[in-house]
Amino acid sequence: MNNAIDTSGFLNTAVGAVVSAGFTIRDRLGGQFLTSCKSCPADLVTEVDKLSQSVILETISNAFPDHRLVAEEDFCGEELALDHRPVWFIDPLDGTTNFVFGLPLCAVTIALAIEGKAILGVTYDPFRDELFTATKGGGAQLNRKPVRVDRVRGSIAGSLLVTGFPASEGFKNEMLRADFKKLFCKAADIRALGSAALELAYVACGRLTGYWEVSLSPWDVAAGMILVEEAGGKVSGLRGEELELGRFVSIVASNGLIHDELVEDLGYGAI
Ligand code: 2AM
Ligand code: CA
Image (cartoon, rainbow, N blue to C red; front, top):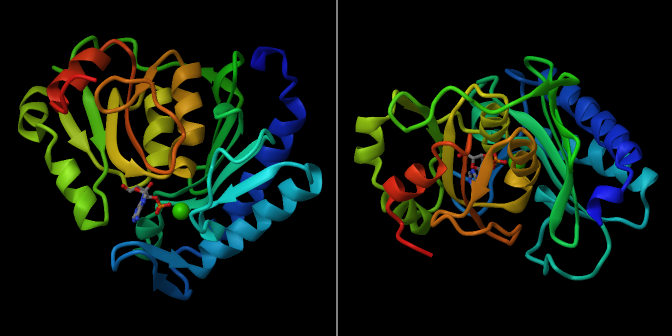
């Protein structure tokens, strides 16, 4: 049973890793760094992503040499459900495009999953010194104080929603299938912050009511998913189905109260 796992040792290591990595990011915003493209011109990586990742990999592999590490900047398309080892999903810099433009909306985010389910998630915003943590059955915290999803908004009307825009052409079409006009007309407003990890953390602490995005990677959302669930919210696929940490993840997350309405209004259809 996951509930029986003592996560405190994992959590301490994870927190140490994200905070150290976060300092390397914070100190380099607005400075000079090498930037290159990955899958397409909009898919960026900088030497700071790689530096942050090396800090995290060293910390976790020293503490847990038997665990598997799935880290964005090392990932080569390998099978995710390979064996029964605990798996760390690591995004060393979520919000790279923001970082490249000098916009301080970025996070370091890592999660530990056992048999495909996250048991721990940690997201750190180095620019606001905000540390979001969650463990399975242990609730969600911001800077070690419990947080909850938005309990005030019970429908899309009055809700503050957030989304993100995918980089590649194929996924743009998937994004454009959402009934954006309907949501835009009903909601109080819609944001796009450019960091899936922060968007999910903000749903978890009630700053945003609901979120959706298509074709993310497991390291973008693994920590955020457990944060939202432990904060009393709901996470699903675009059609309301249970969400797995597969190679591509299209996600809806909310305070739970607006979830069914959000799934219906997105208009991706039934499961
Ligand atoms: P990243 O900054 O780690 O790449 C922006 O809407 C969100 O989408 C960010 O969390 C970003 O993560 C994520 N994302 C996932 N795949 C991406 C891609 N191929 N290009 C740009 N952003 C991507
Ligand atoms: Ca990244």
